Amino acid sequence: MKKAIYIFSSGELKRKDNTIYFENEEGKKFIPVENTGEIYVFGEVDINKRFLEFLTQAEIIMHFFNRYGYYVGTFYPREHLNSGYMILKQAEHYLDFEKRFRIAAEFVTGASRNIQQVLRYYINRGKSLEEIEQAIKRLEDRIGCCTDIEELMAIEGNIRDHYYKAFDLILGKAEFAFEQRTKRPPQNYLNTLISFGNSLLYTIILSEIYKTHLDPRIGFLHATNFRRFTLNLDVAEIFKPIIVDRVIFTLIGKNMITKDHFEKSTEGLLLKEKAQKTFVEEMENKLKTTFNHRHLGRNVSYRRLIRLELYKLEKHLIGEEEYKAFVARW
Image (cartoon, rainbow, N blue to C red):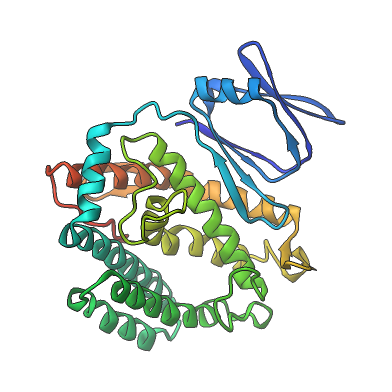
């Protein structure tokens, strides 16, 4: 499995023959091309066309974030696995309402059930979350009654609103009180962590899509419009609860990130560089964690699980096997 490289410092990314390296006042650091799948850039980094040409040859994706930790864009090399047939199948399933709704509803159902798995995990550890769990189950029962995608999105939003009420009970820390979901800018510490974690997950899934025949521009739950990518947003709904949220609960629960790791700016609350690094490290640890996959009968990592989800979607689109979203079993 290829690695992800994270760059927080400012400097230059350069190509030298068949290698690439990062250079700043501290010196040069070579990046092992054969082992690198993607590069995440948080610092102020200079690049040139020769460097980007080499990334294309090496099939390495580069994601850019601004100083506030917001995702700003991706250098997405020429697709090496792009399939005209698969693009037509994605478009066919998007343009046919029943086909699109079937996939979109499965994304929301998968998200709901993974949210319930997280709640059940903490209920089993003494947290009083049963009422929230029941409210989410009632909302999930209404998914099949939706008549359009907007209604489906509204149910997904209501499920998440109930779920977010559980965060304060799970964490039990006043300084990390949830209050309400705010995005740009996030208005409190917890919202800042959620936004940062979700941005990371969107780009991780985008990198995994690149390694399949799927086109990231054609989603099913999120409308395919003038946004660059939507399929990664769809798939992220399934994995946010069991990857991003669990990472956040660990970081706060173990005091790995505290209120001292934030600073106020004109753009709202900013996660300091040290905390960004801590979050990224814990996220990578989570993605490398393996568990026994009940259908495959062997251990897989969470990163591999994302790719397997995309393969399942491919099979659905070409009529091989009906798509069912992954639901965690702890």
